[in-house]
Image (cartoon, rainbow, N blue to C red; front, side):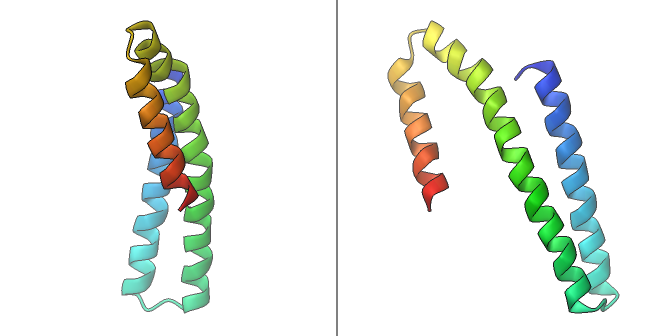
Length: 88
């Protein structure tokens, strides 16, 4: 993974992790359910921003490298599997 992409991915994961920890504390403190749900929606949006960032990095580095190394079938099979998982 490229350094700039890796840095962005790590920042996004830290953000998500912080939100999850905050939700855990809210549940422990018996915070009002609606307030907790608002935070879970924020986590979902953060993950939705994380996924294309990671996919872009994968396409620009791992896929390109795999193609250059002659692993076209393996790379394409992985992409098809990912596509199928995303459709579920």
